[in-house]
Figure (tube, rainbow, N blue to C red):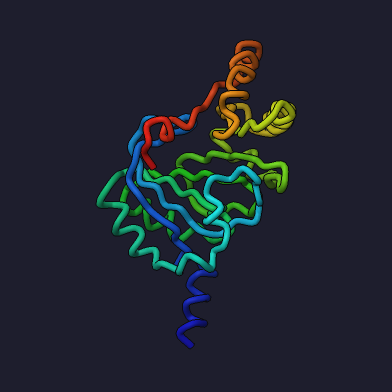
Length: 210
């Protein structure tokens, strides 16, 4: 009975497979340089070969944590929370975001957009992947489009995805970390020729912080 109750709480979003949570300085995209409390949710089947948190993929490795525990820790650290993964939209985000907003906490998400939208977000960072494209609602909701560039074909893919987002969405190209020395000169030239894009760097890795 206890196991069934636990599964039911996860299915409804009152418990989540929490991989880790930590307070740090945001390293990427529009909000880089800002302090935030990161909540990393386990579970992802998008399967990016260059993913730097593959340990997040198997949700069963990360025991369900009651959202009241997650929220209690979050409010000790920051008035901004970033929910990431894994792929957080595999789970219902409504209970978590509603409860965080009751604490007057701003909530951001980083997602592939491949799953139905849930949750009430103050900032929606969409990072599409070729393996499993976003649903149409994600393109319209996106405040920020962050495209990871591993090779030259990813620039073509980035333009395809940029054509689908709303007109106010901020556009970022980010070198895949292991290819940064090769890709960075390519991105600089591309952004100079296409100034609607901005370069995003994983500054937290240069700073050696989470």
